[in-house]
Length: 310
Image 1 (cartoon, rainbow, N blue to C red):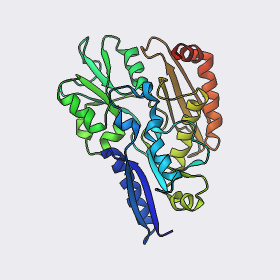
Image 2: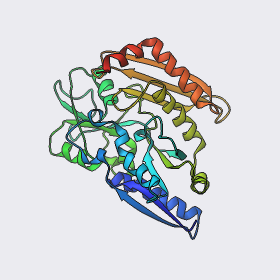
Image 3: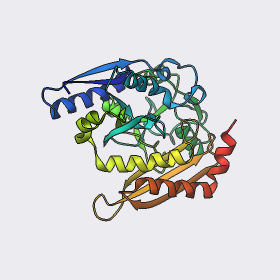
């Protein structure tokens, strides 16, 4: 293959992610021409409604998948937290790369933490998962939707529309905005979304040539962890209309052999939260994800999810 075309969203963060993959591939394969195919997605265009109301985070990837199917691009780079739990038939995740900091970050010009905010202060977040966990611990705060790309969200904070906002730490770090972070929410305070802070490469399943080219970018630990998290999401029918968090990491034992997985499902107002965790073999991450999803059902997740259905 002489040329490789990468489909990407047009946001500054998405372009950074695609350019990161572009530079890594150029280093690995001297002589290979790598180019970007920037695309606009419905998830980027519709900003006056929540993602839950317009179809979920899958709206960020559909146009990129169409470019793959139509031969306009060879692969697509995604934030794994935006990738639906089940891919359409004929598509494959060719690689999951090393993971950035998976935590959520607290950003505010005048306050040091969520606990320091006065009652009634307005906190912005684009995520039902974050909303539920913040509401559970800080019921006196007003949590309002926050849409737009990362720069737009920070600009809204700076205009005084919010007292604070909560964002993925990884995006801030990747765009050189780490100085805006006033503090990090611990995993106990805010369990991340499945796949948060990991980059994924998607291609058509039949493109074995692309799979082979990107194989050296795979990070075995990140891949096992993300697969376990995504299985919890898949087993519970997860998408952005469900406040669901899942995070896996290496467990104690021989390096890379065991995973510890934590997960939760919550009502949007934070009044009901089901939590579960377990350990399992790193070579069978989906089995661990299924087991933890079953534990969540036993602890009330089924009832929480039923109440969310229209």
